[in-house]
Image 1 (cartoon, rainbow, N blue to C red):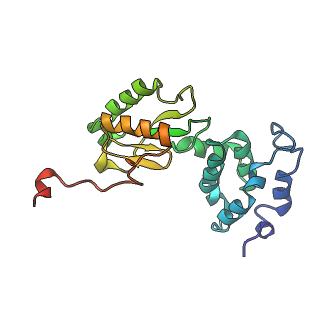
Image 2: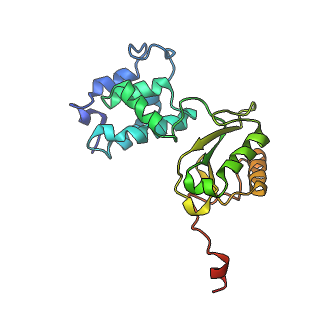
Image 3: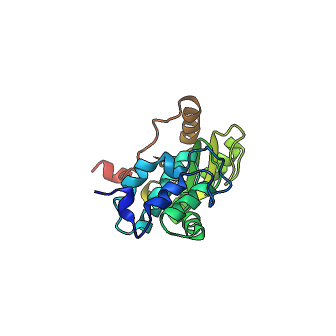
Length: 213
C-alpha cells in the first residue's frame, strides 16, 4: 500500500510536509496561510504517485492536476512538483513548454484549440482560424475581454479524418463549417455546453458513393 512515508529514498515524508509549511523557503512568492498545491490535492497526488515505480513518470499527470486547479500551471505549482519528484524547475518547465496542452498563463473559460496540421490545413483549418478571429476579435494566444474565450493554434489532435476540427476544453468539434462554429459559440455563451461536441473524436463518415452501397 502506497503512503507518503513509503517513498523514503526518493522523496522523504519530511520534505512533503515541509512543502505545506509556511513560510516556505523554496516558494517565497507564495502568500503565508494560502493552501499549497500539494496540500490541496494531497490525496489525489498520493493516488497518482502510487501508479508509478519511478516517481518522475508522474510528472505529466501531476501537471494536469495543477492546470485543472487554475486553468494553467502556475510557477508555484511547477516548483512544488519539481521538489516532490526530485526534478529541477527547468526540467518541469521544459516538459510544459513541449506540449501545447499545458498553459503557462491564464486562459478563458472556453479554451479553443484549432488543429493546424497538414490534414486539417488541407480541408480549411486556416479558414476556421480566421472565422474565430473575426467573430471573437482575438488572435492566437489571446483571450476575449470578458474572459470567456481563448484561442490557440495547435498541432495534430488525432482527428485527421474529420477535419477541420477544434478542441474546446476537453471536447472535440469536428467537420466544422461557419454555421456550426456560430452555433457552438452561441451555445457556449448561453449554456456552457454544445450538443455539437463529438466526444473525443468521431470516425470519418463514408463517402456519398459508399452510403448507398
